[in-house]
Amino acid sequence: MIESDCAIVFHGTRYESNGAMVTPKWIIAYMGKDMASVTDWHGETLGTARVTTSWATPTSYLSDRCYQVEATVNGITYTGRTSGESMIYKGKVKKL
Image (cartoon, rainbow, N blue to C red):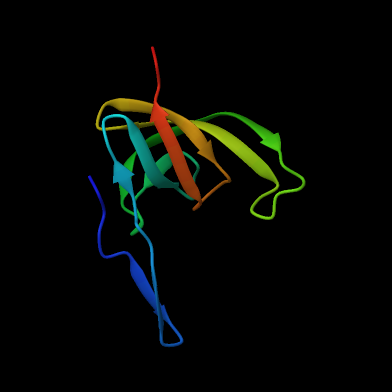
């Protein structure tokens, strides 16, 4: 799945995102505001998510924490990282 039509216009300037991408090997999505789901760029739920650990990132300009997350989409479990709610989540298939 590769998402399309991910653009906004702000003060006459168009900004585009590549949106969410889900493959059998990796995923790029967005963390839900509840930190218990992953969504596409438009906010539609793709699957569930579970934070397994987090740690402080005091020198980061994005967030004061980084999160390790397991997400399940279409029956495939991915493991990856995010900087928090509504931020990009990047993961790869979790090895059993």
